[in-house]
Image (cartoon, rainbow, N blue to C red; front, side, top):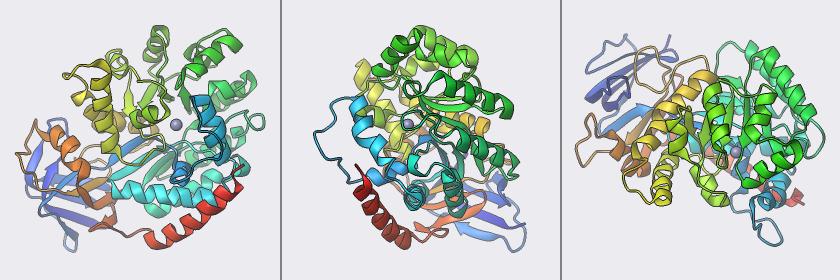
Length: 439
Ligand SMILES: [Zn+2]
């Protein structure tokens, strides 16, 4: 078994006691952390990472991403700019995803993985759509995760918007494949776009597969008010009640956004233990409103944080979540601790339901997912003071080393598992070809 010793680091363990070691050591054996302390005993021949002048924290987790969004950077759809959320979907995303081919799926994914590694993110829950090449698209993404070294929970965005039940077969096949995969590096949920593009027949088919495979769904809910009004008009029910009727709520399911939920829907999510994810930067960008993050937390809902394809930078997502609540509520006392807790603790709890291995702490037995930042604190960094450094220091610090599942993915900001230059060149080519197919 390969061993790796990280020494001389300021170690922020995020363990239950909130331990911070000013000059600590972390021993990694195989894919797990085996010891953490001021001084640990390493086996002979262990690889050493000297983290002098650096801060080590658990690898970050992104609870909702769309890797294919990488190819939207610098692209503006032709015609008038979209003036509301439905137009944003129709004029931009539903055309861009149709233009993706297998090459574009691969390179948009690799680009996002590079960014995740550079920002210290080691686990991503992704929601994928490529309706011109649905079948096998999740295998391409799986390959990129294994090549890069990150953990990924993948799904395909089932929708009836192009052809009925597109994605049901791909999700079903991939869920079964991942259930049989022994290492837990890549896992699966059943992906659904949003209730407004899903028929009762497709939801029934989804529920059958979820029951049979004991898998939850990963779906956008009430992102825009139009999703609720559509549901009420077509089905005489609000969104969460409609999904609950098909048995799609529950501890294994992940509901995204929920900006326009009413009290009864929030209560139903809380009662069923359904997980939720907040994506503040995306919500601001799409001008769909502000999630009632603090209300959802008060109801006891397991609410995490994601980027929804905007970026792969998780500390930025937490910082924006905190600032957005303060601006919206006109209250400078709120949301700082909550936003940090969502990133550091709640995303780890969500990951614990989506993957077999525990992560989110630098402690023995945890998955060896570690982000080491080039950061010398200029004010004391000690127990009770870390969160200020996280949102107002580490957010702009360079990540020096990223380790995932015990493997060093990046050292001195150089990615070791992927050829960044080659991926950049091929991604630019593939993005240009994708844009040329956009119509
Ligand atoms: Zn999304």
